[in-house]
Length: 167
Image 1 (spheres, one colour):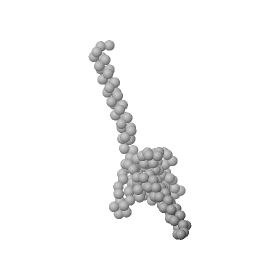
Image 2: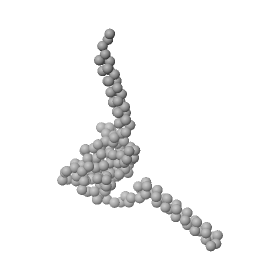
Image 3: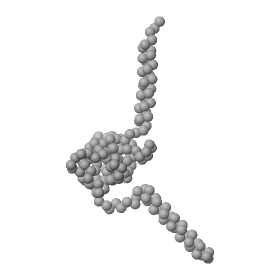
Image 4: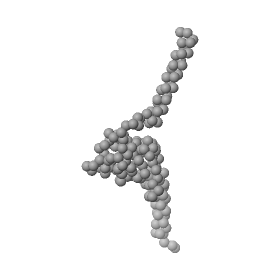
């Protein structure tokens, strides 16, 4: 094989590798989904969304049925307003369903999980999910645990001091 042909083949494989890396980057960043498919938007308000991000998945029973479209702070009640962009194929979700912010794994990314209700009507464009459960913040839980342990220690030492009688 000549030097020119070898250089051509090496260039071809380098371009192929670059194209593969670009495809992988789009796949990982969730930008490959065609946005022209039919969807409907549902709103939910949370006291604390933790580290929830736009484009985070919305799941029901572990199956992705949508994604977070936008997050904003409501200036009237100081709650996070989250717009969920639901796939039109998920048109069967009861309108009394609950939305919870969960974490994938111990320290993973946050996502929204829907728990179906029992209503005969289903969610449609513009509906509001009224029953929501905020994210569990690990730092707050650790702080509460440390505070309660410290409180128990001080309460125990106070009761020990109360039981002692002065001489």
